[in-house]
Length: 320
Image 1: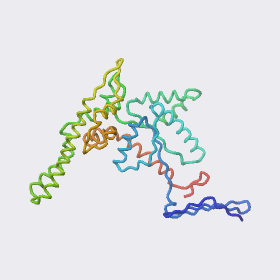
Image 2: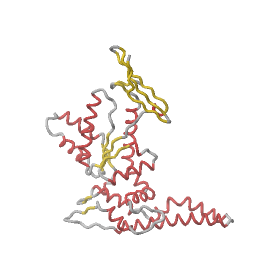
Image 3: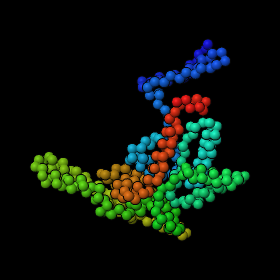
C-alpha cells in the first residue's frame, strides 16, 4: 500500500489534510478537516453592471444594510447590451455544467440602470442568438437570461422624457433637488427636541456646552446639506442637436463643491458617495424605491449561492 499526501493546510484556526492511498485496484482518498477548515467556501455572486455609478451605489446600499459586500464580485460592462452578452455566456455555460452533474454553478446576475424596457432587453437577447435556434429554444434562452436581470427603479416621469441621455443621472439629480428644508430637518427633529429640553433642565455648564456642541453639529449639517442641494439645483444642461445629456452630472457637481470644506461631508471629491449620503438620509422613500429592487435581487442570489455551495462533493456527487 502506498499513501500520497496530496494537500496539507494547517493554520491557527483549523487544518485540512487530503491523502490518497492505493489498495490493489482500489483507491482511497481521506480528507481530514478541523476548525475553520470545516466551513464551506462560498464564492461571490458575479454581478454585471454598467458603470462605476451603479457599482458604488449598490455597494453603499449593501454596506448600510450590513450585507457583506465581499459576497459579490462586480464587473463593469460599459453598456447594458454588454451585460446581456456577458450573462448569456455565463448562464448557458452554467446550464451545461449542471447537466453534467455539477450542481455548483456560480450565480450570475445583471443590473441594468433602469432606463431600458423589457422589450428592448428581450430584443437584444434574441439578436445575440440569431441563427439555427428553433423558436422554443430561443424563448427558453430569453426567459432564462431575463430571470437573471434586475434594474434600478426609475419613475415614469423621467423615463417618459424625450430626447434625453443619462436618465439614471437625471433621476439621481432629481432626488437631490427635490429635498426641501423641511425634509432636511425631519431626521433631526426628535434628537433636536430632546437636546433643547435637556439644555433647559441642566445646570452644569459642562453639560450645557456639550449639548450646545451637538446642536451646533446638527445645525451645521443642515446648512451644509442645503448648500450642496442648492449647488445641484444650479447645475444646468444644454441641448446639443436636440439631445440633452445628463451623464456629466457628477462631474459638474464635483466642480461646484471643489475647494470647499464641509464638516459633515469630508468626501466631496467622491460625488457618487455624496449624493448617496444626502439622498438616502433626506429623501429616504425615493432612495429605497430606487435601490430596493436591486438589493432584494442580490440578497436572493446570495442565498441561492450559499445553498449551492453548502455541501461537499466528490466527482460531482454530494457527500454530506
